[in-house]
Length: 284
Image: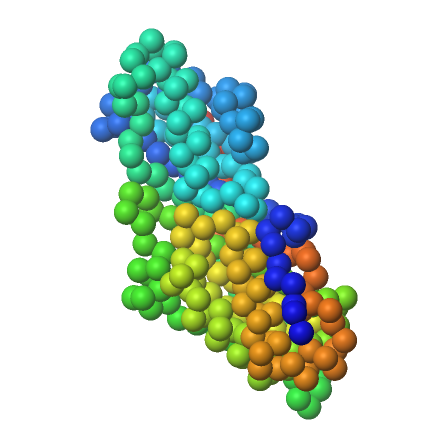
């Protein structure tokens, strides 16, 4: 039976992709115009790219900003777009040559969101109770947390940036039919983990229920949440049809997943906490 793979273009996302960025001028040289880069100016500069500026504070050396990205945008590409537009604007403000380097090469980026990392991990742990399965003799849920290793750190490592990019992904089965049992859930999770190095992602925790899956994962800045979701959906679908075809047929699904996904960024601080921090930093 030919099963149609998922394509990024067909997916409908519900998402929150918020990233806190920080970078400095080249060699930390003061640039007077940098201190006048406010939210209105930055919004105009980034409008062509669909990058929504939530907060920004600057002085003559430092820029700190909280932005909202599309789920198909990579953190590294967004950093390049922002730094390119800002460098051009700084050159126009100071009438410098475009060849003059205004901004430093590297950057710091960390995801944030409505929930903190602790809240997301606790939520995934409580899925059985949340959906009413915890009182059954055999709980139809597979929950597993994975410790970070040296290999996983190498997967996420970057050459010219420091990043901490974490996401909560939710995938629902076709028409919310119960497909997964413990064995199939464990096999799908194992298949995802095999792909971690190729996809430049690291799975921190999974919580499978019969009709949907929660995943907490970390990404390299060169990978977008959207492309990772598609790869995970297709890998899981292939595994189910190859190794658990009877379960799929019994569930009566045409494809494994709904053509949609939730992607929520999160971090050690919520986006409200980040905004408050930026406001306090600006006030001095």
